[in-house]
Length: 473
Length: 140
Ligand SMILES: Nc1ncnc2c1ncn2[C@@H]1O[C@H](COP(=O)(O)OP(=O)(O)OP(=O)(O)O)[C@@H](O)[C@H]1O
Ligand SMILES: [Mg+2]
Image (cartoon, rainbow over all chains, first blue to last red; front, side, top):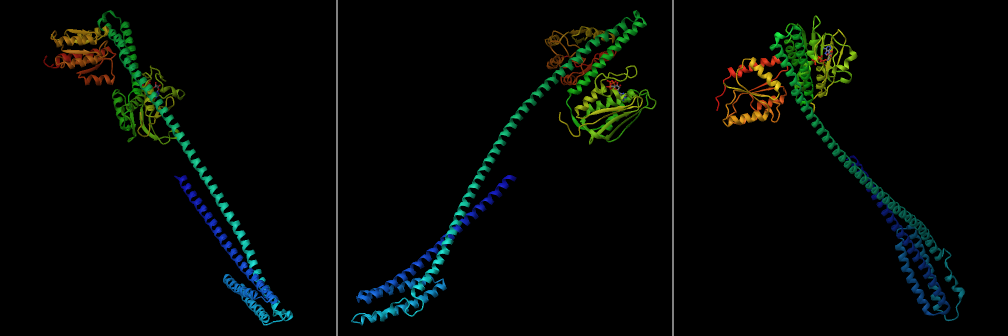
């Protein structure tokens, strides 16, 4: 949009420049015609002046010839010259009407011509009245260029022509100047046109090339996109199939692995009940140990299944009151140990977006652990709360479960979130070591992160974050 | 005396189930079908009038040949057997199994615990409830 606006402005500018140039060229051409006209006019004036000059000479010659020969045809020629001179003078006056100096000169010329003419006519009259030989000396004054000694007719004509010659020179120079201007203007206009045309062509080529590159790029991107789509589709299918495999696996684990355990336990019980009289106390104890082992195996399988279920189930997002949920979970877990007295506090009003079943599982495990690992302290205290995150977790709410129980050595903190990793022996605190692995998986599925800090004997703090808004997948 | 149909492929579990039932003072005849196909054949005989309907069916889900859920569908599909009380007894606590069973009209769903003392107790209550307390629909 922006570039096309610029192009439009440039286009307009170029058009104006071309137009001005053309106007200038036309103007110079006009001037040329004008000064050429003036020059032609001057030439015409000169022509008429020369014609007068010539006719005067002709008239003079005719009179002289008449004086010599006495032939009347010469007188006729003289009169003819007079007529021509008069009409030429009228022409000359008309042509130089705009030049007062010339007009004065012409008027003066006219006077001089009349004087000269009068002298000549006197001579002609003298000759026609004479019968004998001609007295040339008496006629001489009438035949001189200046009968009265003032400037001669030729002199006057020369002045007029001189002035016109000067004008002619000026105008010839002007014509030459105008011609140069015409050349320059037309040449520059053509040059400018060629330049602008070249620029426009270049611009056009560039635009076309840009468009081509854009089209090429778009095609490339489209190609990449389809490729990406294909790859995503492939991965999705792979993921789906591996999920299905996992599901089938868990399903058969839940059936097939438990079946033999039930057989062992069932027949152990049958032994105990049906052959009680044949079994010593020691034998009874062994059977109890067998059954306890089976029990443990059973809960391990259950724990594993729970872990795999976390990966398999689809997330259902909703708004959850975590504070309320934590309180309920605590009450439920505490219900299983009515003899203990534990102080539990939950910061009210902590909400989160997530899968309620899975988040409940998180709280069950964390609060369950807190309950378990405070079982040996005199005043057990458990707190659920939230605080604004700092550093990497800035902008998120960090939820935590804090207790004042056994705690652990921070050296092993990373191990806690792996399945079957425990920092406390089964003798002190029972468990299969799958709880935190499950929690960590749930938090990961909610696009959050988790961690813990503690010191042996000083309690532990387990914290986690969740994605802010609703999450896909 | 009305009998019980036990659909169970594992002979150990069969023996243990029968023992638990007897311990719970269930004196009824117990007929065992060892896979899904056998159970369906048994139902066919009832439909054909060659047999009396059992008072209770204890059905495992994971069976060779024909799955437990298929057997359940078959029972509910035929008028003659549709109203028969069926209790699913299985190791699975997968949600989809529980939901599918109830969809197909199971009367009760019990997960076999690993601990056999618990199972014996469950069996005792089962026998008491379905064989003594519960009023069965009249046989068609
Ligand atoms: N609140 C706590 N205080 C001290 N140590 C803890 C606490 N919570 C967890 N731990 C340590 O982390 C280990 C792993 O915890 P996790 O919940 O995964 O397993 P568990 O509680 O031992 O068994 P399970 O939860 O599977 O029954 C525990 O064994 C314990 O060593
Ligand atoms: Mg735990």
